[in-house]
Length: 368
Image (tube, rainbow, N blue to C red; front, side, top):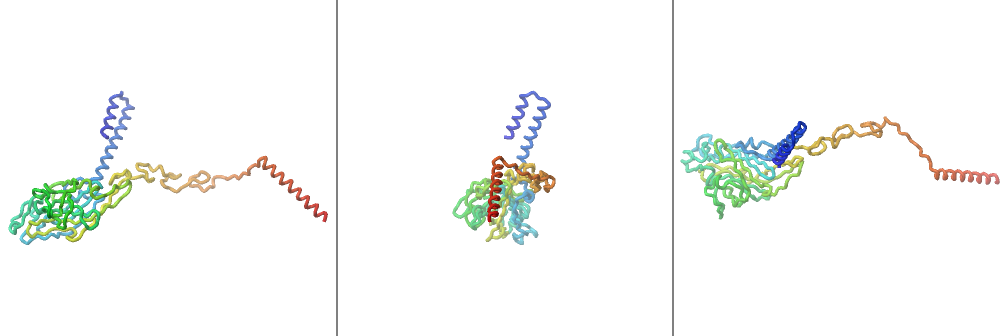
């Protein structure tokens, strides 16, 4: 639509002889269109998160919910070098939604999936190999990230997002390696073991930003058509609405010897994700257009001025027509209306009857 507007302007210019006045007119129209396009782009950018690989920075805007897992809590065997931090240990998990999409960022203390924490995800260290552990590439086989979600908060998980660590009991996912390349997505939930709670894909597209590496150690992804999956309604213009669901998060492997797993908040409990979504006066989610002081979108505060020119002010005009006056600048003249002819007749009749009555009373008194 915007492209058509620009084309229409230039086609019209080509058909007319240019004058200074017309050039100025066309310039004003063109600048208005540019402003309209810029406004649309700015509004759209306010609704999304552009992944860069830096989870903390990417999820730093309005409307983000953060789960802080605190300190290191995934144990590593003494055979690994002192100070080793497992790639299963999650520091924080970030959530953001614009209703249509849900964005999730998993911030690890080390490199996601680097089981032994040697800085080489996908390659087991000599120490890990010596105790029979594996560190597989791209979270393959039993390595898993499972974000289980109870969308209607009835204590039963509905969907799970991430990468499974194997087929569910009695089911087949059809993933060759069960890794981030083959199996990452959003699944219907099936049982209480997180790594194999992935039953079948929900049909929602999920976009993984990048495979974990030393340059991009964390996991970022979004889920499309989230409002349909979660059953969320749109947010009305100039209002805010809070959406909630419960989560339990698992990160770990069954093939890394005795390296621990991370459960957030624990293996038997959940946390509530609470996301406040706001729309500006134009209805754009997390937009920046605010109503004027009169409550009018794109207004200029002119529709609710009092007589002193103050928006929503309480200064009024007095009976003398003076703004903020006290009715003292004008004299109120009280006039008596002139009787009509019929009214004069009634007055005369009343007078005659009064005189007659007076004379009758006087004669009665004289005759006594």
